[in-house]
Image (tube, rainbow, N blue to C red):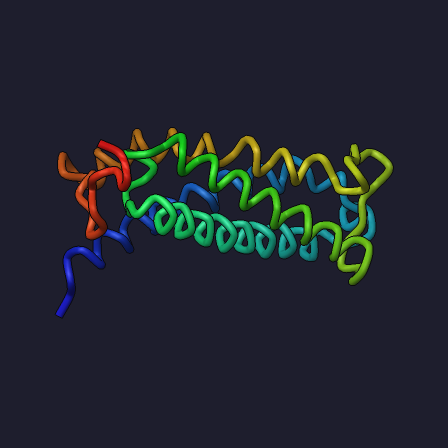
Length: 167
């Protein structure tokens, strides 16, 4: 009933999600003072926002993990193709974040920046740096923890393990 290949993909995605949650929660805590929420809300509201935003970051990270796996045709891309996969994740997540920040700050009014938030074309620098810095850290942590958690055969994948189009 349980397909081993599917279970391996779920395990890899689970590791990626756990890393994404821990690192993004840390980042969210570090930069929350750059958002107007910090001064305007009570402690429980801020705590909920930190948790909620970190879960949203996990969804972004998982979507980019899947995108990299599909583009590279490798479910084990953090081990087998870390540079290519990492670049896909960084570009995709930064593009999504730029659009989301712009929409939520300027259109929906869901959140706002304090005067302390450095801006690039009106978008907060901190959330952009979050997706520039954290994915490579996640890839490095994955490459360290993956073999420990998944064993010697951590590079096995239900997707082809050869590089498509190269020999």
